[in-house]
Image 1 (cartoon, rainbow, N blue to C red):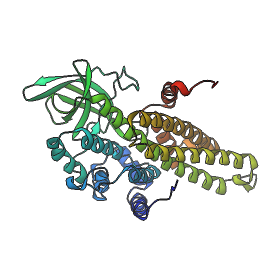
Image 2 (cartoon, rainbow, N blue to C red):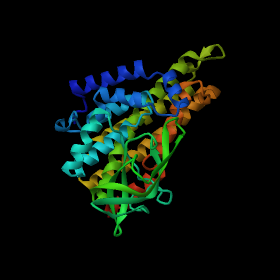
Image 3 (tube, one colour):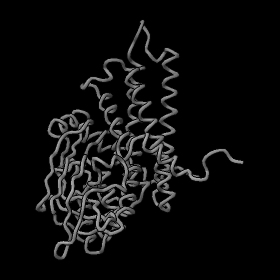
Image 4 (cartoon, rainbow, N blue to C red):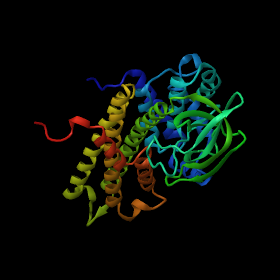
Length: 371
């Protein structure tokens, strides 16, 4: 199989990398964290590059691109540990394009593509952990539309966005709704997360909602799988940069009059980190290429990919901190922020242990000893 990127994909990568290098350096990121962890102006710049419309058809003002282009973009944003939630835009674009009716598409997709509207997935509930089939939020008919009641946790930039995709149960089955943040009955309490980005606890109390699809669990699984593929790509970018920072430190820091990179034991540890990076990269490619596969095959692939990414993130992050020593956990040094980002990504859309269980459950008759 040919894993070379096309000229257009390389040009896209180059454009995003240049933007990150010039417009999102470490000091600017720290300023955004101090200001609350989200900058709508920065998100607007991403939209000006066309990134908010990656998954949106040209008829709705988007670029009409696919998973590989999204992977390329997310890798570069991961290298800069960009906090603005472009992965959520990919999720909203994919779900609305694939499941919403024409009126909802026409109302929201052009606004998402232009960056005017930011729509995020609000699906996590305290009792559900990472299970998607457990949902306590309720929806009921209200006039010509619907109303939603329930609580959602750790919603990305939840107090700053324009609308939410919200799963809620109707007659015991999960459906998916779009709820505007400005709607009556919506209350969002924002806070800064471990990696410096912004999230919120969102309460819906009889909030007016538009139905996206009554087959909510299928749409929700698809949404999360788009998020997993984006998270894997973002993690590869962060891992790549973590490796580069560690190698630079090994080649400049001296101990006993020689650079750390001359010690064989440390060179071996760097080699182990490189192996984990390439395993992560290959599984990120795997997740991306399976994103349009049939549901069961896609879900299986995402579990495998997220498990390997979790292992790689934990190993490389911890090894990097140990090889840096004390400076590796100081706030002034960029490496510590990459470690925090990797720690948070490892738990996003299901942690490593959860996805190990997913992989095990989906092995079915291929597991065990063959006769």
